[in-house]
Length: 489
Image (cartoon, rainbow, N blue to C red; front, side, top):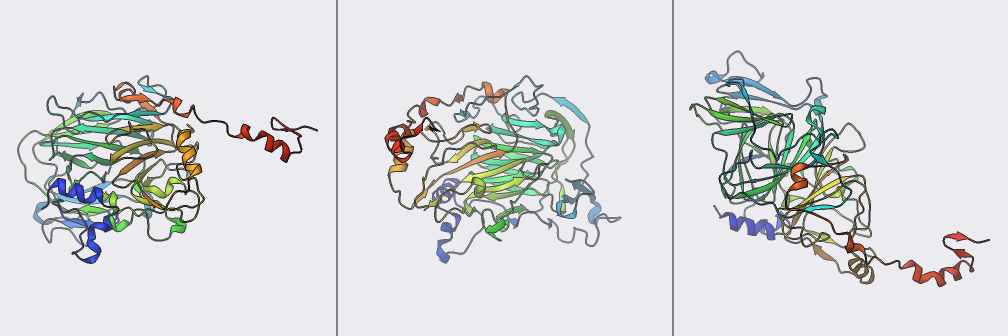
């Protein structure tokens, strides 16, 4: 197995995953060389897996007796009467059902997590100013695991409404040992930024490295290991919806994130009958503790479509204009989550990765614009044009809906004057955006942390009024009857 550093170098320097395949000169491979696990391929449709052959029941879901005395348990992530195309559920066959535990107690382990973004919450804030955060510090004084290192930046709604969104960062330095986390509020999209995540789930293992993401569904138990020690990343949490691939429309059958590139874990079980295995539950944004005398990862076999999965962002197939103008940023969408508004998603996860820029007779930088989406950006590695020098890996920036965007005058002037060549942009870099149709409020942690800085609007002071230098020409074109935008009769 290659080292983590060698794997990082290979994939972060590659323009696209295809470059790692050696033009057919090496045997093709679907996961990074230092990934220790085997996976099944395909965005979760119906998958099945068994750690012991012949264990998974066939022809029915809940037989009177399951082999080896296992218990059948269903995990349902959608309404029972939802359309078949939208139904989410899995059957697991395990040593003990999840109901076997010792009850719940309140747990105050994390004051930096927030879930209520309603106006009645005095710990949330709003601002039309563009905000940004320097890279968040990873704790060095004492052990901090994933559950303790969750910190909320911004969000909208409340999990009790079954439609909403929250954006978090996580900073930790130790693995969860005999401890499992269960999010009963919603679904997690986890972005690894620094350090590998060795994630154990009820369905099997996922190894998530910088440049990869994973999805953990509501109610699925999981533990985060940190083989590199200091670890940092981002989370997009959604309530009342599920992530799915966006429709491609005129793009056709392939492009953007292709279904076959998503990876699903294979069944894995452990036998741990020691007392006081700890489970941390999150309900309504509050944390609770439960204990049991066995491991929650005792699933021998499973089948269904409600399953954690991961995706390597270097496999994303970028699409753009090959003639003129920019295409709307929806072409960078990896995953989307529907809202109750059929015309606007609850959340989109977009990435800006290496790609060609070839548009001719076109102003190449992002054009000046205002749009309805709330946008929270982060940088996984490399550099990202269009942001300040303070936009660094492990940091973030935020713009609420309808906040003006655009570059400083010097960049506008240079891009307007020069004919740019066809070029690669964002080499060795992946930035991402958590985007939503919902208006965001800033959480108390995001508002008070010393990493926060407000965007300096003086960068636009040099945006000169070029039009008034052409007034003589304008008057000639209007026969001298033009004055301050009104035709004088």
